[in-house]
Length: 66
Image (tube, rainbow, N blue to C red; front, side, top):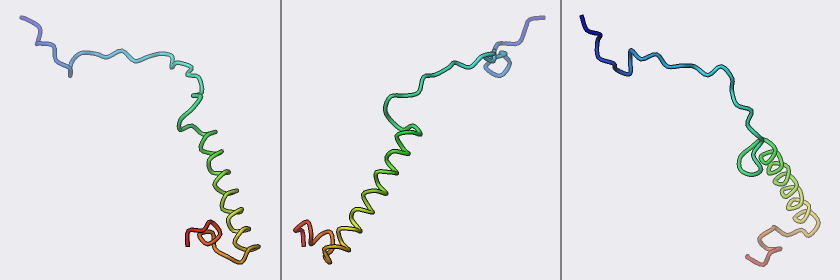
């Protein structure tokens, strides 16, 4: 008898035994960049609130947009 035709269902696929050691990316979405962006945002919000508190005017008024 002949063997059944090869299809993707009956072909064994080898599994890798070792995963590659990838270097940390220099830019883009990785944990350090996201942490740094979050900290910068918190500092920015605190500065905006301080400006509004000490000047008695909103940020848009302080920037001359209103």
